[in-house]
Image (cartoon, rainbow, N blue to C red; front, side):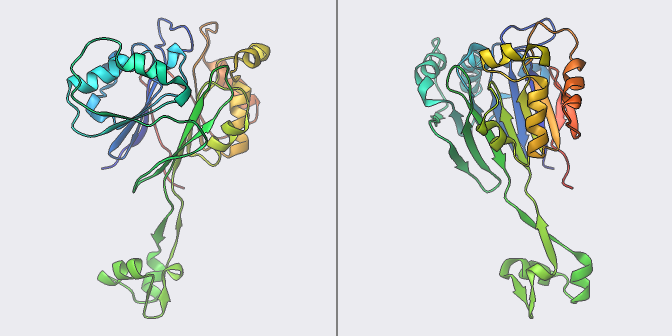
Length: 301
């Protein structure tokens, strides 16, 4: 049975707290696992969450600030220690290649698994698989930063009542799907488009075109909301979003489920982020992330 869910490994911004580890997010998408922004302590958080190195197929770093990347060394060494049998691809800003190299080879270890380096330097598609298209968009932060988006291709949903109306049953249904028509009946007449699901990961950024493009029409959006609204000037200065700004992106993009994360240690009440997001007009499903939380991708409408 396929699983599509977000496993939250850490939710703190620059400084971890007693209750929040540095960043780390795993997207389970059917049989694949995509790890985003492994900050310090990610390997231990994976253990606590029941995530194994064998679950990882891609590692994606938005930018090379420590709270988003210092866990790379441990994760990569664990992949090698456990001899992960399948390819693992790493995406990260090309401008930070020197940081990736230092983290990948931070200490001595036996390299048994070939990590495929696929750095990002422009907006566009990074990979196409049978199950999804994976792309990146530039964000606005003091260091170069990219967000990521996964889009499942649209499919077709067969309509039983229309099939019955035309007397199409059994093996003929598969034949019609393969060939597009059968006995003068077209596929369009007995089916409808099944919209593919969409996921986006938007981390450290000011409001920018890239954030909106990544979020457009998403079923699940993970987005930073480092500051509360009263500290908007700090957010702009340091290249971050407030709760209301993040919610505004989700509202305008038509996001179904919004996950807020990457919280500054200055705030004690996480529910204030939810209150300000609602006050900004976001009406979809809303989650204020906490460490080790699991968030399912919403079911298709």
